[in-house]
Image (cartoon, rainbow, N blue to C red):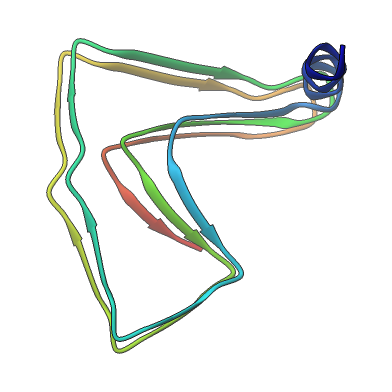
Length: 104
């Protein structure tokens, strides 16, 4: 029941996001962050609800609201024959990241 409620809320509010590694609000020091995603013949679709946005991340490392200091970030993603689609809601935007490293 709880899972169905969460899906319903996501559909109405537009909180749609699929696959990815997220690091939010972290302190990252002296580290190595490597994306070695290897994606083949894959589809990834995110559709936002009425009010919100959609985000389709396929083989993506996302660092959001974090402090990164003295670290190495590398991207070795290999994506082939793949669809990655994000459709925003009525009032929201859409982001589609594929085999990427996103720092916000």
